[in-house]
Length: 110
Length: 121
Image 1: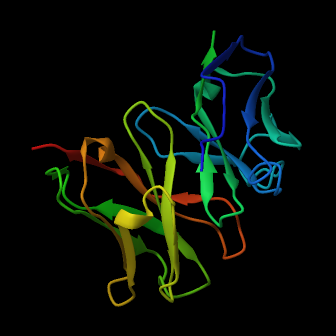
Image 2: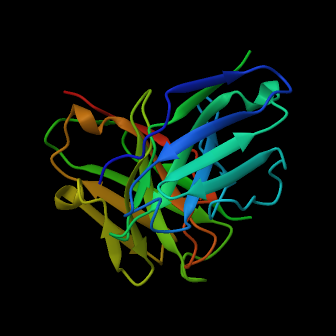
């Protein structure tokens, strides 16, 4: 299984919105509504931000939202804040009953 | 509050077997219907799902690692384990244990803090 494709980095200014893309195949992203997104600060464990494409866990800011179209999933962060600066990973369940992650996207809040 | 904690040797020699344990606190590993997972992250790189094991012992492994991975559950110690054989420098990574909130959930909301394993002679 190949890793999902994410841009290496994105950036935005405080208050702006950014979108991180995650491209897979019909065997993972396109085949299931089981895309999740994780935020990871340096030296910390990943934190779940979005699950099942567009659901937010309790405690996660409404500024985080997810969507999917075909083999492409996206994470949008609106009203950027300094604390959003982190690495973000997408993940999908696959047709092989396994999970695959993206390579990660580093978000810089300028 | 359920917590996961990884433990094991921080240094493993090439060709040897990496062995890690994830201790579950705050709940019995046998309660509920959970798949217990291992995920790793080489320094500066992305996450890689290694595999999962159910309390009954059934498991799924990443095809790229399947020939070298063995997972097990010890209900008496409330922990589950990972063994990765014939390790090389490419297996150097932070290893996390993780769990979804229920059996039919396709994401991980509970993670350990991770443990760094270095493969070097």
